[in-house]
Image 1: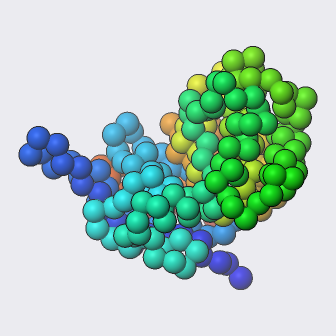
Image 2: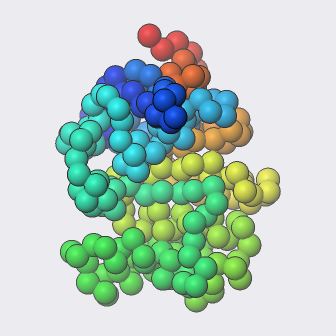
Length: 238
């Protein structure tokens, strides 16, 4: 039975600057089920990164409903958003976002240090497991600047999955990588999905988008089409 993980209903996001209103998202309705592998594509400025920020509780909508694991998170406090984000959401960024003066193990462990329910030994065991999953155990004591771009992104993936989040959000995960390293990172995401991870990825790369099961196209802040790779049927958004 399919389990709904995320439900967005009539989401709008308006930015106000110098008396100008910018409608970044307009009436977005979207359901993400547990185990989904989704790509979000569209031209620059179409709203896809704004949508990912809302999904990741890094920002809030101007209007609309956001349910995560059946809890309404539309208008919760900053502190509660941070707590839920840490427990439920793993992030992979284009620019890796690793801390240069922390070694690989410390970078991966960092999000776990905010979890009061975990002992130091539990955190270390989870870091070890995440490192093994991305085949980077041999680099555990290296620092980010001692690693290639592809290796840094593997560490970023390990950091995203270490807390066993409900969903992984990836913002242009191959954007700073050459084709060989990009392929390796996408193979890693494919593997995580096969093992049951729920993934939502923003990408400009059509090759990466095709690896997802659901392809969503955004234009001018609206979902204009969705394709399911299993059915290969295009459906225009209502």
